[in-house]
Length: 124
Image (tube, rainbow, N blue to C red; front, side, top):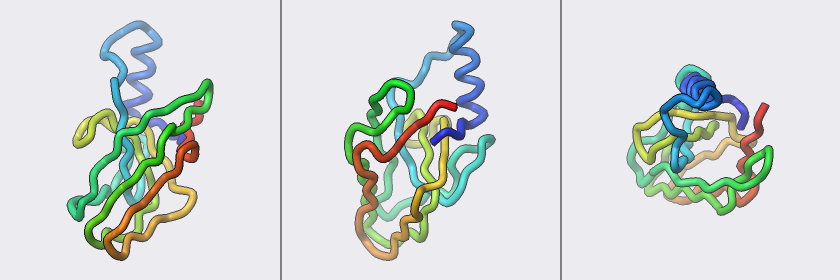
């Protein structure tokens, strides 16, 4: 993930100049069907058991997820092609977004899992 949203670019610029607001205390990963720098992730599922998942990163330079990230669905939710980070479990501000290496088709109840160390946030 290296595509920062416009919100994150402005946040980073203010942070580098020692200006508020503060950086997020937690970040949450979401799934969706697209994204852009202006809006972040789009097409996030609604209902069917879906919820954003808290992510903890580690690393120097590139950041990787420490734990498996599991999205549980109670019903079909279509094909999900992108991920995005937000500063809140719902609502909040988009921080970054990226296409998935492989789309996840949720055609029945089940789980989409992102294994430890496979979600990589790369500064560019």
